[in-house]
Length: 339
Image (cartoon, rainbow, N blue to C red; front, side):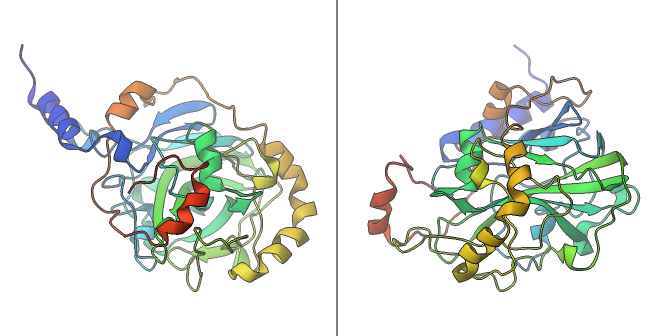
């Protein structure tokens, strides 16, 4: 049996990478405007010839960004440069981010942000971009947003604000893992989309935030502490009335605006904004089943292919855990803890 050099390289990459059991995760495919697109597949795409053109910007592996002041925080390492393709979606439509895998103990918030590319996203440098929040979910009813994503088949659904002005944008989905106390791990992924229709809304002023900068002065909680009860979501308020993220079927876990990054003010923040987000929370629970057929020329891989090409722990998650005694109370939620 003869193998091409490309197939041998892909096979070697798959064999050398650790098993998916120890993997973290990345966005393997997206549904945008009713069409499915492959994400950037870091363990196979670099070895293809020609290298595929994706709507998702490159990332090196499935590991985290550990420095919240690094430019890598925006779109992951290497993600400041443009990708080769752009998806099209109408304002008010959904974007479904499908992750390869997520460890049950890597608990934390999930958020989606967007930024205007001021023209062509394929040439847009994200290093100094200003971002606006589309949705975010943290901790509600004893459950983290990361758990909601897992329970929804590794998917997170966001809605493009229907009032947003037409143009090309980056859309950024991120999980922050808080399992290693004192060392949050950031997993960002950026996709390029062209928004059609829409209105005249151009976010500005306090609606915008720099990344890095989003997590400046944020004190993340010790999630294994028995006294932990609440968490205030960092960043500005979501824009528009379609700002609802959905990684689950629990309406109470949807987007919550945070006016402060201090955990002690979480109860106040969630109560004062409950009425204004009730409608979007209810709507978000209906989004989670959205999965479009693979109709794009850049169609996403099947689940079996994505799993085999995503064996992904590269050693960038090395922080030691503490307070192991406190983990016992989480056994019913986390059958296995691993890096």
